Length: 254
Length: 261
Image (cartoon, rainbow over all chains, first blue to last red; front, side):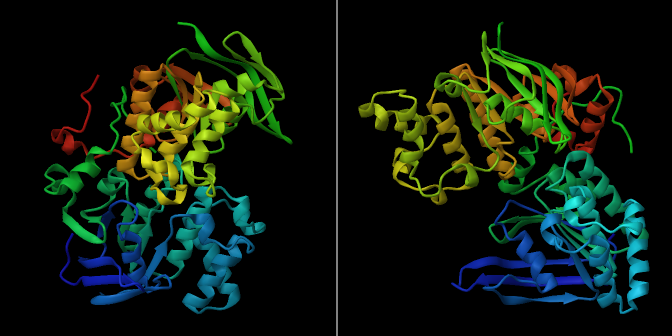
């Protein structure tokens, strides 16, 4: 999957808080076109900060102290908590149309049309076309779909996903992941997927980077890394995936 | 084995919405019942009704042979303790750990006043925390440690039924494992009966003896753990189990997979 021209290259990225406390230290990776890269680790390991640095959305008080981020494409982000990422006082289609209006620079009328198309693509109900609704009137899974639609409205070459399914139920989680994968095949964007769930990362990503306390402790090809982890921290993460016995009669599809 | 808790034809409505629809459930003594289901399926409502935080519209709850009514005695309240999802919200930030643990001990008169200090230390030791933690405040602890304190508080009054409502969902995966281990040792050491709510099937598999599945306020299945995970009766259970993301099969050699049963 590695292509010769990476769409995103990060070299020795370091981030620090105002108090000079290092938050992310010497993180480097590159992302090929259409590739999916997984960033795994526990909370506080700097995964989200790295993503935010790529987007240029560092929280107040955090500064980049070193390193280069070379990006050859537009990036957009899907956040962990969809309700928090949406404006609760603005109906969802209007919110989405707003993003389309500013990002794609089309007329108000056209932006609404594009927004509705996006919603259809993400499998949201048609009823939104007739009557717009507020985020609180939608389920968590539906809200996450709106957030993904908003990210796609920016026509990104790189989609940054910050634990997009952690706040969701398992069945909804599977639907969202399926949606993201099929969209990726259709639109061909590259993806950085941040999660602490190794099983999800293993299914989605071709390469994994394990982060601990702001540094990358190990990286490599997904299967290889999971089978032969060299760092004890990676082993610990693998062990913490709770096993389930195999279902008799096979798993259900779809 | 007798049953600690019996729930009979329980119905709860919030306005026009039926949150619990005619639920009947038995909890056998000294076992752990894992309750799974999607959000909004009524898991937490059931826990709250059993703990006495919500009054049911219909049906009754029996603890041992006693019926639990809307107005419960101190003794009845004491017997059922609950641990919540978010320890940040369930521990008072302005109370020291000593105050948090001593409050319930004094209220229910578990030990005489002079022995409270000693008992607090024992409780902390039970959840693998040091005695010097007593003078600290909740914010000085990590999420996992805070959840341990919440567990110590729930255990302080020697309950016969422990309800844990998603106690590990807010924790990191590695911490989650250690908290689960703690639950396991405590339930065997203290002979506890536990109602363990989670939407994470991996967690449920690790801790339960019996699994109950809820959907839209109804109980769709209750089976022994091994049966549930290999031969679920209901289609919905099968759907839930299939949706769990799995490690790729080639990693079986790594040894973190249970052999097929």
